[in-house]
Length: 590
Image (cartoon, rainbow, N blue to C red; front, side):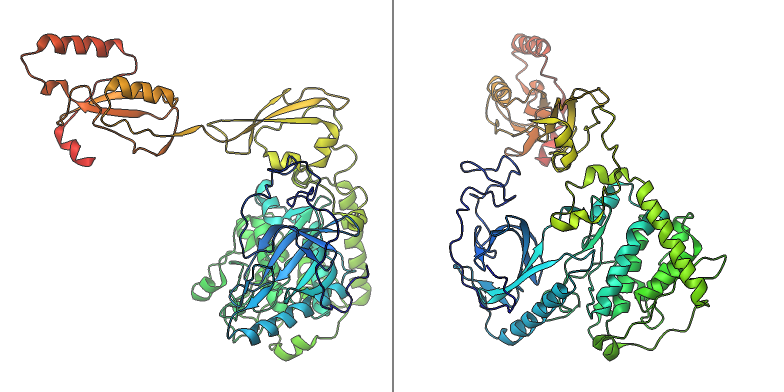
């Protein structure tokens, strides 16, 4: 079928039998219930605000589970029925302006028709611009655009990558400048080209920048200005700490300098491991600490460049990505910087461009020195990319970027010796999701997962393995990984009013073995539980201590000493009872 170049209205029709496909991973599965591959259960109730599973868009794209949602759009996992490749289906649906009918179509709220249609056109124009810039590396390609269900859908290529924020948390929270420079410079070049094409992102942050297994960064979640500006027509989504001050004030102009602020904040977080303070608080008390004070290994010119990119006043801030790159790569010794050809301003920039800031440093624009510096810089970067190996990415990214994009880095930055020592790695402490998502583990080992309750490891985390880490293994041997399902818990039974013997049997039947009999000066029947220290119905672990509160024997009649002695002997013979006297005043705390 021909792609919808003209974005014409499309009618949904049957295409293929999708009943045997898991809508959580698009892999074939047998029967109903949770998918053995990803665990997704498509028989569970789904939010009516989302498209029904297996909806077909444009006679071609099968809609699966929801990947993400915000105040403007919903992103689903999808399957291209023509190519068999997984895609991402992004549906324009601002929740404050519209709702979903039972048949999946969009119903515009009364009085919101103008805003809905205006933003719909604006959103579609962004998709068209991204599609025209599909040749740019580092931008999730738009494969198709079509109208259906009274809205517009952008079909994006699906990639296997993780958010940069998650990557940073797994490698100590920060990167050295030498490592960060290798991955950030290509991204900065991509953003510069987007600006040249008239696109401003406004939402650059650790969640909207992905890193794939080759170490390449990808920019996702392009949105209309309404989503990235406070007090707009829809529910805004601002990235605290990364959104520029002008995004909190609709009266202030936005432009390339808005993305410069976000990129500076992202690099600040990457190099220092510290969350940058929110722009609104900085307006009251600008407590931004220079990068070099948090991490002395950061070059002075890099720290200065980031501070200049994060200026609160847009007119004093670095205005373009080209200026930011130049400042980051400026050599303090030679006072040279990388030369970037001047490009024409976009219409948006001409309309809202503030007065340029006063120069903060002198530049040497000699073409000979500049071109030479540029060549030397990129030769060194290329050499570093081929020689340096980043071990964190080895266990974080499941597969290379799909389709043709995966061929962009031959061999990636892993090198040929990944898992080549034939020793079983240490899986303990890793999540099952991370292990299953790493294709090279599956290629080298037959992985068998066994789920067991464990009080010391969170749910989904591997707490033991067989054979042990470091064991030599060849020919794709079997590795058994024990995955925690979390601590064993049971509801606390109601044993008030039961005799101690009856209560003990009930607790034993629940697997609760750590309990004591506590005496209190309270009225009640002998050997009958008055209350417990844990409310009935509360989920507790089997090893949690339970106290059975009973009437103190000292309140019994003094005419029955022999019976008291028998009770005392019985208590001493029971390993599960400890008699502790609680003063009468404590009964008021029940």
